[in-house]
Image 1 (cartoon, rainbow, N blue to C red):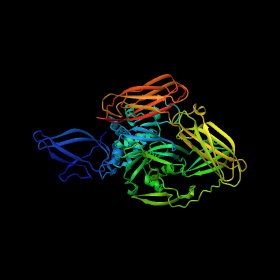
Image 2 (image 1 turned 45 degrees about the horizontal axis):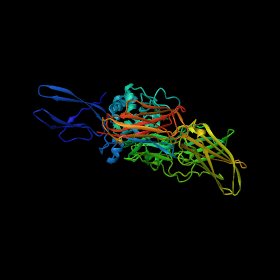
Image 3 (image 1 turned 30 degrees about the vertical axis):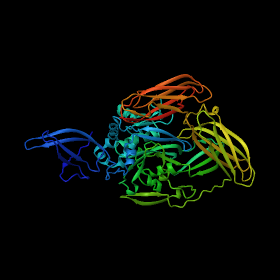
Image 4 (image 1 turned 180 degrees about the vertical axis):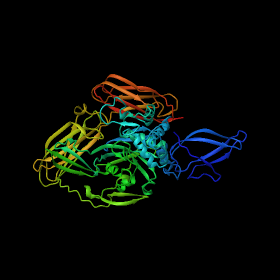
Length: 637
């Protein structure tokens, strides 16, 4: 389906507000003329039919000259997505390569991603997404008109990237088996996903999680001309009841309990899109959060945004769209409660855990840029926000009033009453690496003038990045004595034998320390989440990481067993969309200590741009991939 507009010729030059055309004389003998067609700034993103009508004195004729696709133009100053700096346009529109930051704020891991907007068929898939949206299917004319507004378009695409309530691209799954699809961690680029969706005639691709949804959305937005970047929030809150407070419950021995609908994701990935917000006013122009991960409904569909980053930072929680939900994701308070026999026996409010880091890829480099200050102001005091601690006031924003906008910036708040007589911190020493002991330190400070007998409980649990911990795999209990106003440091080690049956590389661990005063019954809690660093897989491209288009090159992939024991059933797998056909494997029945497993593969790129080689290592003793690595390859003509 194509959009149609009537274009008139003009001798006065192009008009930025209407369709116009000019004829430039060409080669008269060859009966050739050049026609420049100019679209208005507020044109709709769509595929257009180009028809030529020729009228003479005695005859008229019409020709179908073809079709063209009209996109947003971030190079045009009058356009709603205009971006002033060329280095920004190069990074946020033209670059087909990105980086996703994952893991925990303790040790951030990096995953490259190939956006693939120049791959054959990707543009067609992005346009097809628009054509099968519920809005287009119910009223195509209205949808075409509204597509001139990037806020509208981003809202449509955001809903279409997930398949929760439409013919969307990607189906999400966070638990269970992935055998009937692709495990989310195996994806390394968007083009493969878009191609599969088109080939299946709109059947959702299985499976995705937040970074997959966000990266595919970033691809679609860049294809359509909207500057976009992938952003990771570490310790992101999912505020299920909308009160800006997240509750966590723990047992008296430190085990996390699943008693709350709220949750803290170790990391959550969304997209920022650059645009003007003509619907709410110029003060909200700029970066907008657009989150396609299906968490909560917005306007009857699973989507979030576009939400102005400046509205989050200023705490204008009534600003369209979904600002209160996004604000809670980066700045909610956590109330951690210790529960025993159904009663709360200890409580701690943490105002700094949520949104501790907010990262995106820097321009021209894989080094992260910290966006935290763009989202959050430093809190003036340690506060505990409850329902009556926010101010509600009508505020006129741009041409449309936003009713009952919640403003948190100037309201005085009651201070937290922290009457704890113990201060406890829990830290992880060094880089916790899969296959080695995990070193922990608990530091206790006695804030009283009395000697105290304490009971120390430590608990370690495997944790999904977006949900609560699983069953505990390591515990420690002991009594310790601390002197008046003294400090006490306790070192703990979790040996490999205690976790090797539960954890592999990149898994996330939650460790909790609960310190109890045996006389006063006071309990104090400290927590730390961290991810294990994967064993290293080496990838080397002979001749360097810049390869020539349609020329065969050799890549060598290897893994060395650094454990002090043999690994049975070792499998090294190599794949790379746009470089390799299918998967290639190397297998060893037994991989001895310090022994290497290696695979040489011939790679060839059919299109230019940035491609990714991925390699994974697994073995028969684990049901999961032990290590996965991605390697960037630049393809030149």
